[in-house]
Image (cartoon, rainbow, N blue to C red):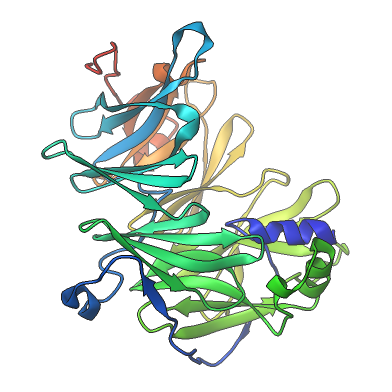
Length: 409
């Protein structure tokens, strides 16, 4: 169990548990930012984060369109190449917007904001960010930090958090206008970067523990974690200040069953934090549920009881907020909506499986896979209203697919 607990430290969704204790705010000495490119006087006077922060994992959906890699088969067993496909919600048409000519295994995240498309590639000497301006077709590239585990995007910049074997150590801010970067050190012992809002990032860090970087092997680190306290806090990259929210034992409390309870941060909605919690036995997860609490850790309540063994629920977000939590249930799905606290069982009214929703559109519809064949390029999408979906009716507007090598529908 000790090894398993330490292995969780390297995950973007590390798991912890216990009833939290609220604590008073405090601050840290400002962190030191080292610019990798000269910053202008104007940018120095501006806040580092500008606009709504969005996890790059959610930025394949812009609200108006959805972007996804598709693999293009090559003759003679050569590696497949990656094409970027856009599903336009307004026209209900799918088109190829980019033929990278790059093997699929070298392609990383793809995301979009405004008139720009971004994607990363893995190179022999690190990772490269590609920025494509769709208004004129121009492309810029720049190297970015290779070992990032979490990334966020706002109106002007990309924020990549450097992950190591002992947690997160630094944040690289990539200015998407100037293609310059600066690196800011994170508070010591940061082990997770959970979220972002109002110019700050929600982190967790170890309190009262021996520095993990000073320990020589995994067994020593795992032993140190047994008595460590994990603190949730807002971190401001502009001045390095830290606003503690609540603390809990890193390894969590034991459930009545005797197994440790661990949890994972899912996101925020309407001023509440949402977590997945489960009892981890040697072979499975039991007593699985979704809980929410106030930002100070108070008022913990279970909002969704889940089937055991399925792991974390699916999450649909919009503007950085959870809109739906989803889990499989037989041939159907269970949908929880934080906005009104409702839980709905969704089953296909025509029989058969229930398609998993991929994204929410700005006009309130859902993007679904209506069919998924053996090859990704055969994927077919459809758009349905939330009301129809919850009623088990998935026969909305079919998206016209890409049908030939030119990318035309």
